[in-house]
Image (cartoon, rainbow, N blue to C red; front, side, top):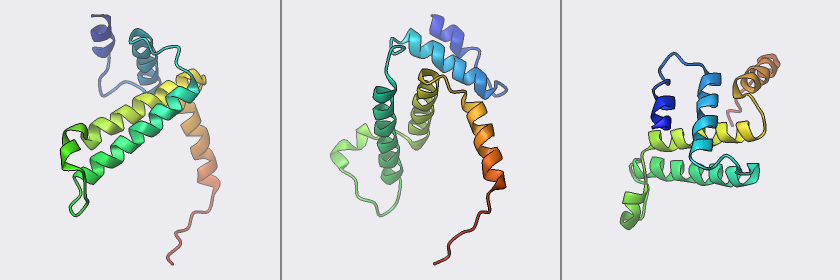
Length: 118
């Protein structure tokens, strides 16, 4: 029931910092609060692979194991899983994803971006 209370606080207008705090709470509540950054990183890679499979499943001309189609979730679900695990890693490492994004984009704004057309 506590998780439902946390969940009810999520809506379109919450900040990234609020979402990161929500993930901190539910990860602890679900019993994963002591997970290491290394374990979480492996989980992030696993979830990324699941996103690749979900995209491949819905792409015409891509081969997939039809006996495992039920194992492949939607791309939306897998993106959400990646985001949850990424925020968990940020929490483990005491990184504000919002602050890290702002700092990185300040740097990126100073770069000269070009597309190699070869």
